[in-house]
Image (cartoon, rainbow, N blue to C red; front, side):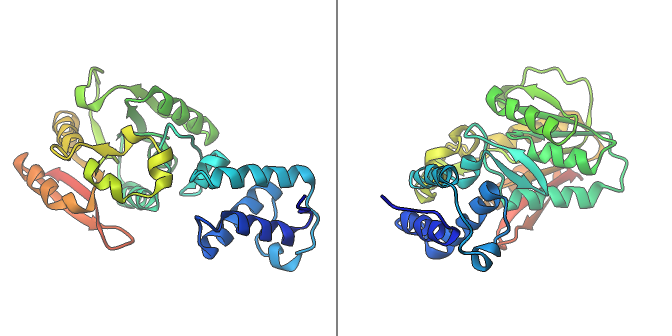
Length: 286
């Protein structure tokens, strides 16, 4: 029987167990995350206090997480939460794990609008609600609506709103065949819709394919902009004067989205993400 009763031994055990699918750097980063979450200690103590005692119950918790990591389960799902613009966001496999690019998009929206008079915001394909909640936190005078087809995702969004002491209006509907009669117009529209084509699926990591919700990720190759087209139509119908539509986009579809926007006589600006890829679209009336 392996005796893992110190922090140093726990680190060695953890890294050895997951090294078959994670690099040394990845394993070290993951260990720091779990140490912070499970032991409530800072990462520097891994070096400064290697002989710190580990209880059996603490070890068993790590062992369970090791087994889940070996099944390619993302650490955020193992922990049951992540952080988005410093907000704690509950997640499970009914919602996507928020990416840094989505944080960047939300920061752009906040920076461009926090000094303006914004009354109504709508987040389409809200998932965990992270964008809607962050916007409500940073533009507090605005009313924020959040739409998603998945009732399970919206349950998570509701929990996250409560967790972060915010009020957002939840709408269970399909943007591709909207039935809700919205009796207001909006100043800000934002969406991170499904945009990965089925042909791109083969290039994705196992942890995404095996655990994240495909309904929130993939579109058919023969109609990759189906969500963008419908959301632009929605924007045309419900936009206030000077309203703005913000999209996260597939980096290889920027030119197609530009052509689609021009078809609707809209102005479009494409912005790059932190990796210098075409990732965001800002759309307005001409």
